[in-house]
Image (spheres, rainbow, N blue to C red):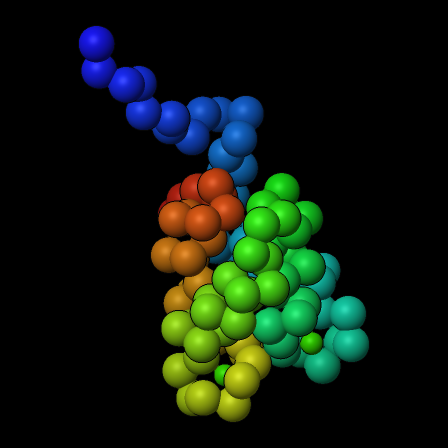
Length: 96
Ligand SMILES: [Ca+2]
Ligand SMILES: [Ca+2]
């Protein structure tokens, strides 16, 4: 018998629009500089219920989405995080 793969179900997956995702991330901008640092992103990852490797993941995510390489995620780079969020945070971003 094949092993049933564990899929993300409705109770583990949030659905939000890109705008909502931006608003959600901004809540973690604790120093209110308008940018998301890897520290702040790690907190977001933990809040989404992913405690394991949240610090490393936060760094990885910032690194991959940080288009201008300043070490922070600015508003226009948040879209780059959509892929990460969908794959790692169980967040589904829908276009409205
Ligand atoms: Ca910040
Ligand atoms: Ca940046």
